[in-house]
Image (cartoon, rainbow, N blue to C red):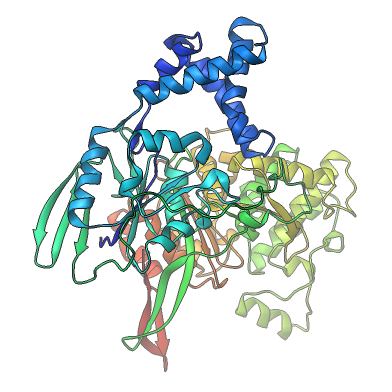
Length: 599
C-alpha cells in the first residue's frame, strides 16, 4: 500500500490517558473504583455536547457537577466547582503522556519526511493545552478539532481541512483507535484507514488493523517500506514525493466561524436526513472490461460485519443512510410475523420476502396468501404489471392477458401486509399510509434489527413507505436473521428464503444462483444497486452501487464477503461463485469481456 502522508487521530491513538484518568479523578475527590461512574456521567455529557445542548466550555464543569451529585448526593457551590475544574485539569496535564510507540512512530515519519495531519473529534478548548504540554503540534501540518465544526468523523467532510493542508498528497493513510470513526470515516473520505487496537482482541479488519504503532523501516529501490507488527506494509515511494507543505512550527488555525447549528435529537418520519447524514457516494468498486479495454466503472460503498453484527470492514460510505428498497423485505417479513401473520407454509413466507418475476409459481403463492385472508388481487395497492420474467410475460400476452397486480414483483410483500392487517383487524384500504399500525410496526422492527434510527422516509416503487438506514445497519440486520435461534421470527424468514430460493427471485437470477450454490447463504437484492448477503458464522455484507445499476451489486457483495469478510466458499461452489463475482460480457453472441471488482 503506497503512502504519501499520514492522518492521525489523537486520543487513545497517540495520547495515553491510562494514568491521567485516575489521577484526575483523585483530584476531584474520587478513586479508581469510581471510574465506571465517571464514564457514565461523561457519556451523558458527551451526548449533550454532541446535540448542542451543552457548550464545550462547560463540559468539564458539567461532568464534575454530575459526578459529585451521583457520588456524594450534593450540589457543588460555584467556587468549589471552579476549584475542582482547575485541580482536575492540572492533574491531567501533569500525568498525560504519549504512548511510547506513538513517540517512535512520529520520529519515523519525520525521518522519512512523510507529512502528517491530525483529525480529532474533540474540541480545541479541551485539547489544545494537552497538545502544547506534549509538544505535538510540531509534528503536524494541521490539527483539526472536529468538535468545533458541524462535521465529525466518520463524515468525509471531517477530513477535508487536513487533506487540504497536505496539498497534492495522493495516497493518505489515516490511523485511529475507533473503527467506525477512523477506518470507516477514512473510507468515506477516499483514504485508507488503519485501526490501531492496542488490546489485541477483536482485530479482524482484513489487514487494516494493528496492535501498536511500532514500525520497522526497510529500504527499497525508491524509498522505504513501513512495516507494522501485523505485517501491514506501507510503501513510501520517493518517485512520488508529497506535494504538501512542510509542517509549520504549530498547527494552522482556521478562522472563527459561526456556532454550529444544534443537531436534531431524532429525525422524525417523513423528513429528510440531516445534510451531513446524506449518502454522497462511494469509491470505484467495479469496472467493465470489454475486449481488454476498460469501458466503464461503478462507484459504490460496502459494509461488512461479523456474525454479531459488529463492523469489521468498510469501503466508501458505509454509515450514511440509504433507502434499502426491496433488500429490506426479509426484515419486513419479520415485522409481519411479529404482528401476528401466520403463513400457511414456508413457501408463502418466502414469497412475502421476494422480489419475484411473476412466474406461475410466484403468482400461485401470492394468490394463496390473499385467499387465506379472504381477499383477492383487487385488494392489493401495488401497481398492475406484467411479469418481469420474459417467458412468463410472453405467455400472459399470448393468452390475451394484461397487467395484473399479482404479477407485480412486490405483490408477495403486499399480500402478506394485507393478511397481517386482516389478522389484527386493521384497515386494509390504508395499509400504505405511514401512520398505519402496520408501517409503525415495520419501522420499529427495522430500527431494532439494524440498531439504527430511521433517518428519513420515502415511497418505494411499489407504493409502500421506505425507511432510510445505513449499510452497516442493513448488514447487521441480515446477520441477526441468519444467527437467530430456531423458533424465532428472524430465523423463520431466513430459513424460508433459503428453502425456496426460486420463490425469492426467479429462474436463473443471481440471488437464486448464490443461495443454491453456497450452503446457508441468504441473499436479497434491492433496486438502485442494493444487495445484502449473510451466512451463519460468517457475518454479513451490504452493498450500494451509486449509479443504481444492479449488474455490479452481487459481484461486489460476494467479493467483499469472501475477501473483506469471513465467508468461506466450499470447493463445490467455487465455480458458481466465480461466475457471479466475474460475470461475462457478451458481444455478437459470444463472451468478449467481464465485470471486474476493484476491492
